[in-house]
Image (cartoon, rainbow, N blue to C red; front, top):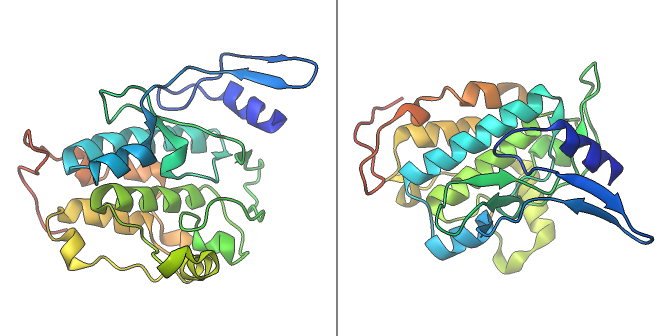
Amino acid sequence: MLLEIDILRELDHPNVIKLYCVYESQKYIHLLMPYLEGGELFDRIRRKGLYNEKDASVVMHKFVDALAYMHSKSVVHRDLKPENLILASKEDCTDLRIADFGLATYMDAAWSPLFQRCGSPGYVAPELLADKGYDTGADMFSTGVIMYVMLTGRSVFKTAGNDVHMLIRMNEKCDIEFPHKLWESITPEAKDLCEKMLEKEPKNRITAQAAIDHPWFKMDFDNHGQALTTKVL
């Protein structure tokens, strides 16, 4: 918890949960943070089914911008998933905060790889499960999984009967499909960014800083969330 407190004190970004103060009682350490009444992104996706591209692009741009800021501070979250993204209000489905830094850590000055296994099956980067060492790129893989879920309403890695062991094996193998029936109405730009985030090889995976300038975030959408223009990348 002390590391979590240090990290939260270091971070100051509109889309990262704010730590106001810390105080101790005889038995507990209390963290004072803002009340975010919008609830988890997970619950919002479950109610909406999926996000249209207009709303998804707004959410993802804020999310990626916050990650770029965190990574510039050498902070790796290590447990990004819809349950740890909190919406500020019930009315706005795009105003989110990255929360729950209990597994977050710093990269050292030399950016030596991290090796601790942590995170949630189905969202973690394959290199983490293969014990090959990882860095901030692991957060980008998790971000890609979240984007996939937001746009399709489906999990990247799906197993019968919620078999956790099978889920972990599929997550590590990382054979990701983009079924036509799920992606036919989604723009090539959105799919391209998602694929770049879900790249199995860490050295080829897009960084948060690079993702900020992706063409998807520069597109115009109508009032129904549909792209006004698109092109094959």
